[in-house]
Length: 134
Image (tube, rainbow, N blue to C red; front, side, top):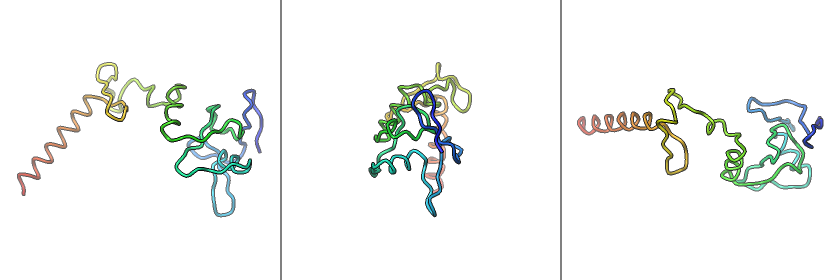
């Protein structure tokens, strides 16, 4: 069961999943630890909202450290606190430097300009081949 840390977090001591969240088996249903804590402390889960940690500790089940927010609010909180691993990367998956080849798309996502151009070339080559064959 939960232990305490210096930040006021109640740390889950049970089973964990590979993403770092605790998990609890309640009969035939599995709950993430923080969601179960939220429910057991008299709150309800709002459809379509994330349950977010203000403490940024995935194992924290302290209901005072939890808040409901949209996925966008949760991601902005993550980025603002420097926790988004993808936003901290210096290169794309093919090793191109974001310093030299960064492209911000319409959804405010980072993309590699070189990889984006290569993908476009492949797409149009396939489209042209299909047109010629029909």
